[in-house]
Length: 381
Ligand SMILES: *Cc1c(COP(=O)(O)O)cnc(C)c1O
Image (cartoon, rainbow, N blue to C red):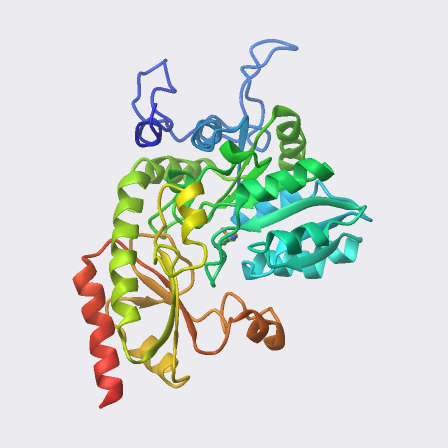
């Protein structure tokens, strides 16, 4: 079946006792045992809950994996995956990384003895050179946040297979509608489902999908042992949201392309980072490995003072963290999502004080452009 159909079928028909179309919210912490030594498959909701199971089964199908797991946030999902690594292990990680993942690696994982090399994973040779005898995994975001650098997933898988590493992809930015890393050979996919999968800026959640069931068993063990699970209400919200992911992504990326082309023409704009522009260095790789370019773009302005002016004067586009919802949101990575990364590292990788990250919503593109245009015009006066 096609992805559009799979999305709509998420969680449908899971309750034969009533025929309920959608999966009910099983707001129960515990489940009655039929007899001594017998279980319905559900005993206690930290271990498993039927609403969460419906979501976990759905995301496994959508990402073409063996098993899916739902967590209380994207960070909890990523932390569960990082539990696979022990003192003495080494990881290769995309250098232009979600700030929370950077914080987890630098302040928690490094303390327990896991070393990390931050590498520009868009550069395949740099990744090859970064492999050490104790390297256990390559962790990538593609496109990256916020500089939209594109990594060749199949090339990472090839390096991993040569050295028996895991390839882990944070697929938050494109969602399984546009990109399915497991089909390209990746071992684990993680998501902040707070973004496109939920899609409505109303839930915090994380998902993990594993390629094989052995890895799935390990993640399941950590999920139950640590307990950072997603509750039934939020699991239901994701099942509700994901059905329209295909429609939303089509509109997000149609709008993003139109706005990227418009921004390129603006005299106040220095550079537009959008992988759907043919001038973007990752354009050809994106065409090869994903079916769309997504709804995220970043742009830098020439004048640093324009940044606060924009953030305070835009009317439709909201100045707020997060991304992937139907509403257009704009953020200032240097002060918000990436504030934990030291300034000299930020400047070196391009997350400067003139860079803005834009999560393009599904409003009418002309209204979004008009909002930006009015602020640019007023600033120049
Ligand atoms: C938001 C985000 C996360 C963290 O997810 P939360 O749901 O906020 O915990 C991780 N990776 C990426 C790429 C993100 O955008």
